[in-house]
Length: 409
Image (cartoon, rainbow, N blue to C red; front, side):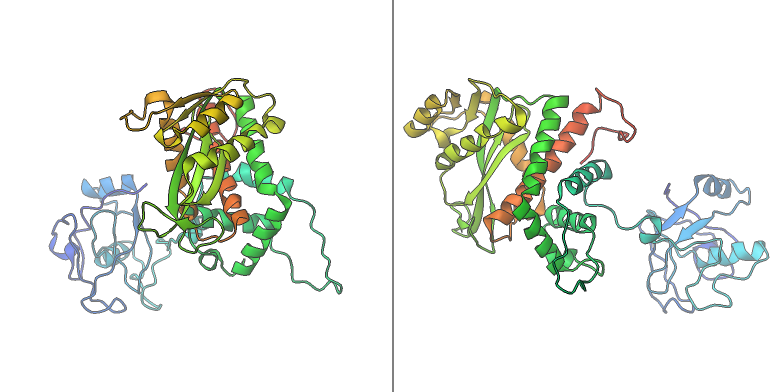
């Protein structure tokens, strides 16, 4: 646990806040001028301070705080709200214990063994792009869907194949952060491997199968509200062009992408159809509804007369006729009239569009092929579906890896 450090030990031989007994003020910095720290430079590094030891030092009980300090550019300082130079306090504490001063007998910036340098990798590696309670089950199910890889090299001298789990985690980072493949690559997995494995999985259709499994699991445990549907379009940027890019009517004719989104009554994404940004919303509705009909193979029988909420962009005779032929009860906002978004339950699809735009790759799509765009759309829909499943199941079920709170992102 981190806490604010407002005082340092009063006994110190150096020239700093501990020497004069001056109390630290929030936001104040102290110059570090000792050997190995740089004259007149300001250094900051994370400091973790035990609550009990710190309170004991405040009461004057002689229990000096035990710090866990990380170096930055050769200097040692503390942050935790109030940046202080703690080298003098460390010298004083070491002297009281009869131990060598901090950094003595070693190169500058080295700390006594009681102060362990802490970095992100010491605590288990980098922070995942998605909470483990969501990412782990999706990864396990995805790996189970992959076909067995056959090495067809004639001489059998390929380099060792990168683990599918490693590649999958990198692609999740690409989706969440919207970064390029070169940024997500490292010494363990190259950008070429990411693209090649992505194309291999697209050819097998594994991501779409994963999305359907997530929908089926949600329907079995929570229940999809398929008798109350909502649909709408969403415009995003597509600066790299491609098959799903067109001139955006709301962004000075810059290249953009449109998503035709169909959701159930609670906002679970059922169908996401990509198209160029200059495609009218109502022209994408038949394709979206055709894909919805195909969900019957994965979800079982669909409602015979579902209700569909649409905004004024779908108020055309051709849309009314098409919905009547499909036996869908249309709730379309009339053109030219101000209709609240709550009318007909259209707000759920707007919320789903916001959920989808939280992914950087969808907010600013740089993929040029439609198959690649659909790959990331299916992955994003899977993450959203499983997150909603965990949130709803948190109050209904108990399991070993149940998160401490339903408020997960």
